[in-house]
Structures are given as C-alpha cells and as structure tokens.
Amino acid sequence: MKKIMKKAGMALLAGILGAGVLAGCGSSGDSDKLIRIASKDLTENEIVTEIYALALEDAGYKVERKFNISSSVIHASITSDEIDIYPEYTGTGLLTVLGMDPLTDEQEVYDTVKEAYDKQYQLTWLEYSAANDGQGLAIRTEAAEKYGISTISDLQQHAGELRFASQGEFDERSDGIPALEAVYGPFEWKSSNIYSNALKYQVLENDEADVAPVYTTEGRLVEEQFTLLEDDKHVWPPYNLAPVVRNDVLEEHPDIADILNKISAEFTTENITGLNAKVEIDKEEYADVAREFYESIKK
Image (tube, rainbow, N blue to C red):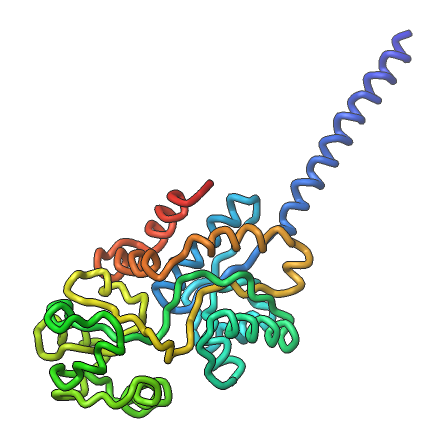
C-alpha cells in the first residue's frame, strides 16, 4: 500500500513539474514578441515613437527602443533588418526615398508610397494620421490681423506690405517660392532678407520681418504671436505621419497593425505641435511628454 501511495505521489509530482515546464515554455515564447522600434533624430519622431512603444508594451510586447537614428540612414536600417518599425512621413517616402515627383493629395501620396514600399522593400505603411509636418508659412499674428490674412492666397494679395524672412534656398528650390508662384502668382514682398533657419522665430518676434517659411508642427507655432497660414490651394506635398513596419513582422504579429493604427488616429497637426512645444519650449523630457499623452488617449 505504501509503495502504491509513493508511486502515486511521484506521479503527481511529475505532473506538477511537467506543468511548470510547459508554463515555462509559454513564458519563453513571449520573448518572440520582441519588437525593435526606432526613431529619427528629431524631437517629434522621438515623442511619436515612444507613444507607439508604450502601446506595444501595454499589448504584451517586449520593446527594444533604438532612438536618435539619423534621418538619412533610418530607411536603410529597416531594410537591413536592424529595426522592425519606425514613424515616417508620407512626403519623405515619396520624394526622398522613392525619388518620385511631388503629389499634393494626401490619399494619393499615401497610396503611392504604400504600394511602392510593399513591392520594392517588403515594408508596410500602416494607416496615416492627420498630423502633417510639411512645409508652411507663418506670419506675425499682429500682421495677420491687420491685413485680414489667414490663407496663402490672402498673403499673396498683401505681399507688397510685408517683409519676408527668407532662408536663402527657399527662394530657389522647387518646393519653395517657385512652387508658390506657379500656383498663387508672384509674391512681390515689401522686402526680402535671408536669415538662418534657427533664427526665424526670433526675427518675427523682434518685428524684423513679418513672414517666414516653417514646418507645420514646429513647437513655437503654439505661441499666439505666430499664425500658421492655410495652404488653401495645396501647393505642397503632405507629410502625414504613419508607422512603417517590416512585412515579416506583421505576418508574425498581425495585431500590431490594429494597436498602432488606433494610436495614429489620435494624432493631429495641432496636438503634435503641442507635444513638440512641451519639449522644445517647456524643456520637458520627451519620454514624459509621450507617456502623458498616451495615458490621456488610452482606452
């Protein structure tokens, strides 16, 4: 009887240990859910990447962050299997990576890059967000109110009363003044002087100029003294944010698309500008800004 009980006890113990081994195998399987997510060396890209990373972690993924990669090499990093995901801009994909001609319809730009990336690089563009970090023009709000200017069409009509803070190359490059004048007509400024890009807001703030080229999600645009003008004739290509993911990663983890698409749906030009301002003006850490935003949208 004792031998029978002993055998039964050993069998029970073996069963318990076996279950533990199986459970351990399941846990080690979770290591297969490692995702390498990267950001460009831009404040905005770091914030957005961190928000995506937090969402993936909440969904049970182990996330390896590879931040501050040069914009010029990040595409090569994903095609060479060094990273799995990074946030990209549709205009960058179209013009810089693919070398295609400019397009101005955001859906057409997205559809074009999505198809080309899949065929050429085995990469998937997930859904694009409303956030657009493209070319724009900003005006001193005081001047905008004085002349009733809210669009670039309005600006063109009042160019002779306004001082332009050029950045030199903007006067010559294809997406600068030549593109504007081809669509809106000539801009005959009261004056036009060349300033460093780093000084453009200081120049406007000091009333040394009235108008300057900007990017549409720059943090200082939250300040009431500056007004971002509407590109009402859509002269510039859109630069909508979207995650780019390796096809093999999506095949293995298809839920990633839904996780990140839900996050992208929350991004707008306005709230991304506000997030940039918290880092660039208020000097908060990008990781703290990203977590605060993620917690505010988490459902």
